[in-house]
Length: 377
Image (cartoon, rainbow, N blue to C red; front, side, top):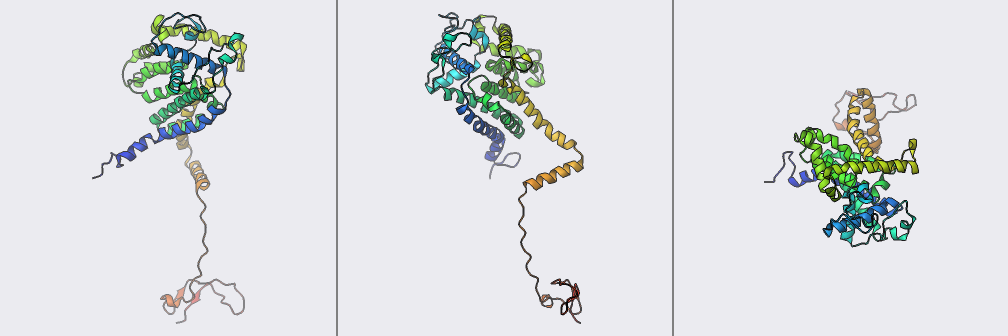
């Protein structure tokens, strides 16, 4: 006897139905992001992420956790008060370092510096064989993030992924070798874990990719977000997970190391706003919009069906007819075959009136002037 699931489908069919939204979202993201990864020009921030990724991943794999080095910028070690540890957490750097180690490609010889002309030359450029590797790592992270969102939310999550990928600049922002691709993976992890005991740990992991994910941490205070667990302990649990994955925090305050990092980011952001002022005089590149784009897309796909149901029935009927007319294939009308000439042979009795076989023009001489044929009795 063929095994079936509760819905009556064979197990293989049920499994495919369960993963189909995630699979489609993953493939859609790859199709949209890979061409962008191969064509967009290199950004200076990518040079910094790639160099620091190779540097700190090398330290990690060699179990070298010294807090001192030969130079605070080109060889800082894990010193928690130096520039590189303060400016970003380590999750994204470990992603790129892992990708380069697996592919066996080199990193830039020196880190890029916006303020030092000696660290802006060819030695800071990403090697040609390395750039596609690290960008593919970013693309895979983003695609996995979209897939996790779709795994949790079904086809609505797939639709939200499509909306994000259709937005201006989103493909370039997610395809570059910086923190936005891994951040999308972190957001996907949090979406999948919401409502379970793993939500707070997922928030900690997401913040290791980029501190922007700290915006999700207030949700960790909700018992519903953690499957009825933790309560006020939600944020401390996320902070402990974050610290465990951020070695520079081990040498200064542990989870509280977030505070000096946030203070440093504020100083850097204020300086960038003065140097590169954007709208309203603040520095706000398009990649900062990625989390808001995902939130906006999820809101659209969540509210659209409810807004449709609230429309008056007459308007819904008009919309349905328009959609049907736009999507249905036109039917080809075949000519009617000629009607038989011998009505009597079809079993019509004498003296009965039958429907007209051929309508003819009235008033012509020699032609029947009636719409009916009468069989004489």
